[in-house]
Image 1 (tube, rainbow, N blue to C red):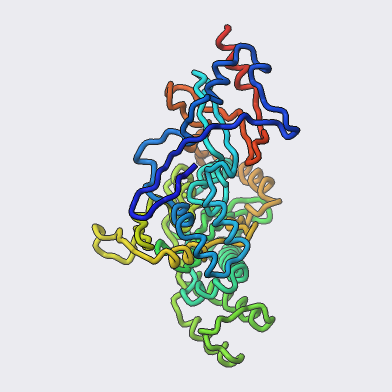
Image 2: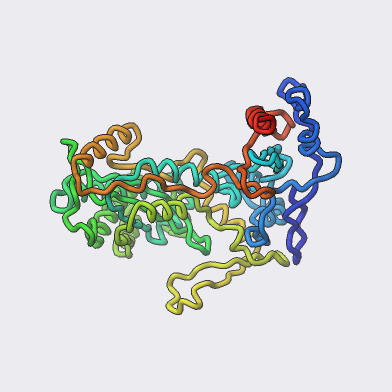
Length: 462
């Protein structure tokens, strides 16, 4: 369990706890010795009388000095007293504050080679938690690997003007949905146009709502196939293969038009909340504000195609499950002030691109909570021939088409992600850690996998 953090001091990343004897939901304690013969030595390892560390061993380089959890534990209670928060924001704060503490129970893994046992408190698994993105990211990336085609992929970014991003603080779901709809429909319309493609591309969008300073900055990252599927099941290559997919200036104009059209519909339907500081009193003033928005720079950035499937995998591994700020960027917590690093992409001197920002604790918490998404909100969405429900059939059609094209190279057969097959044992450095026991906060057993022990016993007696 993480110890309370005091200001001007680095928090302790490990503490001691005595793992309780887990029980099944009915209340019966688990006695592993009754299940597996000669198991007393392993049982003592799992539930020793002395205190043990609750965190898995990690190198000092991997351990951040400070965490968002430290900030919430120090200043969260006071912040909640002075600010009105949504249920989603309260739940996120609670999850991050209690992540990897006894509040979520604990789990144990055993090495499939030497029998070494590792214990740790469970993670909160909240998608906004800086400590809980690894597993979700890996599973999502592995699913995308299975969908890779022997084609090039492009990366495009659609960004809202700052005035709209700030408006999302009062209309979160509405603005983000409009962003997804306007950007995706723009790409599909250019794909349908025979001048550029004349087919339906496949792509997915990833919503980010922040820059590194944590200010509102809504934008979408798209990964798009260089080519598309026709209604006749044929694959069509882009007209300007290897150069660009669609013209960026034209994309920007169409995107702007579609978004503003949707924003107007929301306003006249009474769905758009306008903050008082905009000072919009009637429809005429709203239209003037819209005209001003239309004159702003609606940024669409299209990058050259990826060099191959491996680069696509590396990219999506970096971007898909990012949160507003990582623990590694927090520099100090002192005297009610939070200092963190950020990358200034406008800095021309590359040696000075990384800078430091200091905010009062309440401002840091406010900015972090701006980026809490509504519960069950889908921040990754699929479009074109990758639309859910049609994706499997479309991918099979495309792969069948490519089988007839002898000159096309298939993607590499094996593209792996880190820790795809468990974590390497820190003791023997050969085996992999396999989960066998998971408990909840009430000490009830959620999972008990005896097979890992039976396999170990078989190897030991063979």
